Image (cartoon, rainbow, N blue to C red; front, side, top):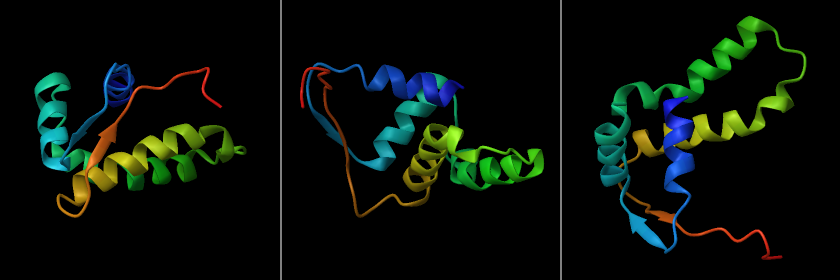
Length: 93
């Protein structure tokens, strides 16, 4: 829940920003006190929980799965890509 709220706040930007995965993780740690290691297994843990609960409509949780996959990728790979955060306009096609 803290990660989702953090991401919602970060996506409410007025300008484009680019940062490394390392700086992104440091900001997460400073803001919501989530370490890198738990994020590394986020996708795997969510998948295991969903199988254990035997959810009939896994597709209903696609947004949560995307966030878990994103958290796992950012915490696993520190080099080779950058995070680009840009403003979103509802009026854009």
